Length: 300
Image (cartoon, rainbow, N blue to C red; front, side):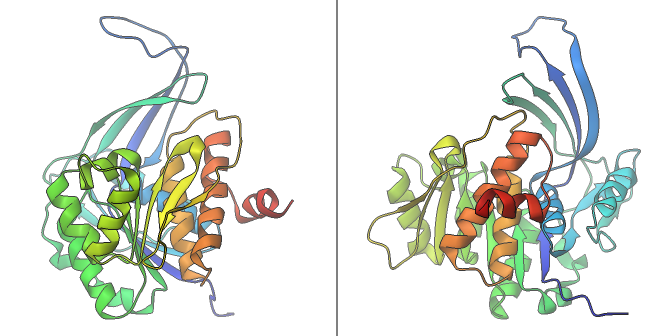
């Protein structure tokens, strides 16, 4: 058998069973409304990123926690069907798996109601950190901060590039995790949580001063604003113009694509553009793209 030459990317964090409803409008309660469509499938920040890594050509290992309820095993099976290695995820006895209800309107905008699970355990001692030693990149989110902190520290000690999804979370958690990461890629609400009251450029500089090599914030149709310590002013990677049908998971796909690009040794500017293309296609199609689709958008 030929050796697997795909770069290994380890992703750690949130995995959720998404229940997605296509609706004509997201209305205020009290109301009773009819959905045009319904589907279930894997979601969550790091889980969506893992699928992106796999579909875009990486060898993805996912570390996450689910319960031994009726959602947990099927969720891991769904990730495995996408080519993600879930063999070392934690199935928590008597745990309740995270679930989300996702309402998507005809313009692709969504409203999410999330239950983050129960009795999943926070102790990271079970993590097989030795598997990071062969990885080319590590990605995490802030949903399991104990696990993220342990793995970020292990990866940094071994010179493995790390990426954190700076999604909306408690300020204290972000301020603990961001300095441990090499590449901090925030959402706009996440950046506001990390540096309350500061303008984006100031907040990115704060992340760099904390120890990151790259700090970025995704800004939807305005593209991605990013900086390195060598930059006096932020740079901007434009967004690809697409007709969005479902923006759910587009940011997560951006993060997965960016981590894979870093694992492949792409320079940051090129990695940002690659990630932007992958995220745009996810928003356009409501599905994570394959590598050839991204290359076609990038190069025609």
